Image (cartoon, rainbow, N blue to C red):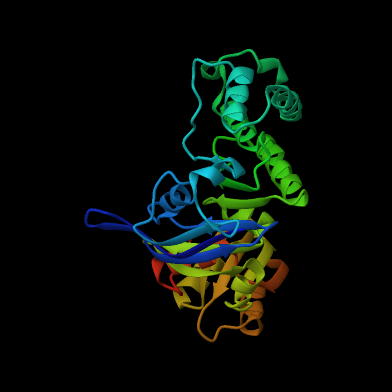
Length: 305
């Protein structure tokens, strides 16, 4: 569906993207990950034809990316691109017509999606009258109306509460089930683990790692210990001070630890059990959040508490 081959983009003395290569297969959800300033948005804008690469090639549907192919891409930018004085139904029809969709077909789809997202009562309201969450839902609808082959979603859950996040997530999974291909850029690692098939992590414009989500996690081994307990949690600080573990996530009755050096579950369990009421201890693959931070910081064993 999409291929980037040694793509680079330069701004004066700054390299935004450097020799970036990856492939997105048809029908998958692909995660484009990286910290702020990593080059994700620049990469997306090159795919969409907003920017042009200074080096390398981009292929979409086995053709060089071109303006003729833009109608087959839907792009949800992180920054909202809605005209505030236009009404909801009006702006959605406008965007659908820009992509070449017949007005009668577009109006049917607009009614469907407004009802689906429970904002049909706002169809005659101006964009500026909507909350940020409602605006995000309208922008999402504008991207899917013309049924593009590739949907590019940059932080699609931005500004959404948990209920509306689930609405968008359900829609994304339905689009995938219908055979659509999605390129998904986000900082929310828990969403990536739920829905992405493959990922690429970029940092300072360069590819750091990539592949299938499970394979990426498996490459780090089962070095994550998930512990549920009742009582005193001071044992966590003792373990960190000893250099045995790093803390990934910490809560009043649970903690996720990354085992360091030669530390094993067998050596930790008696120590923990003597100091608190242990309810559960399970070795697991590291989370993408852990892997993300380890790679970006360049410090595999640095605590993440």
